[in-house]
Length: 343
Ligand SMILES: [Mn+2]
Image (cartoon, rainbow, N blue to C red; front, side, top):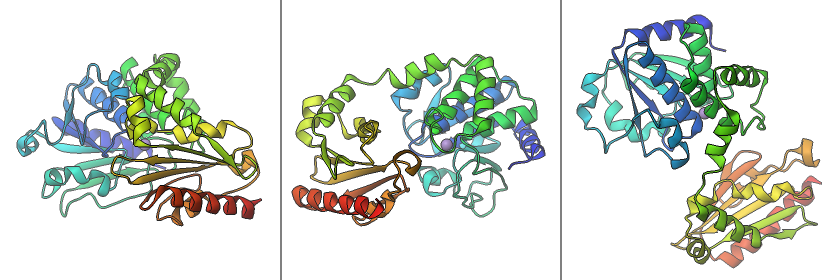
């Protein structure tokens, strides 16, 4: 738990910076972007400057958050001399060197003080050998946006409608709309306050989940048409190949979260999605249901690790080399075995 006084001191430190550089992890998600945008607005409403620098272009589905907030991309938008104008660096939603790797040329040897606000377990040394760092880390927090909210409350920074909306996006995306196990009472307390401040759950939902490219709908239809069930319909399997992507006009990026679809069926306890890429390589995503829901506990990371992959107990992935038919048969056999052993 981060003490109120720690938030106040960090807010005072940033208050002394005329210009703050805001960084977050590579492949920024809703929580990372929500936290960056909320912090930038908060800092600027107090009359100081803040610049958000991302490691890649903002994913299209989150651009609605940034309608009034420029997001710069490193290194294409900024030369190294960018650092000359800043007084300090605020790092949000990560404390991991590997997730900040794209910014290495910028951070290495940079003496600027840093403040890190994060909710992950990985805690690397972000001092780059000498820069002073203040770490505000609480791995029990549901989202980085929950921590930004606590910071604003502790420091007395006001939360306007745009900040409330940005924080709400982080809260709901990192908790899967309050359905992941990190969802706690605080999440609902914060959500309640953000809605009071003007965040609109219906509109945020629509912008996040009702604005996908049509190709995503087509590839989903094709994936669902390939569903096969094994082990008394406890195992669901789908596959996509390059011809299907061409037919749908989609890319493998459009398959995000598709593996969860078969979980809607009560019988299904394990779901696997195979994606064959252009170069012939095969990617497999694995999911298993919570034992509180389906009655058996299948460690899906252990299954993925049999094929060189890994991940979490309920969600894992693997990159596979080899012939598709043979790999598919081996994975089905291993998954059926894991289900049998857990029953
Ligand atoms: Mn996060």
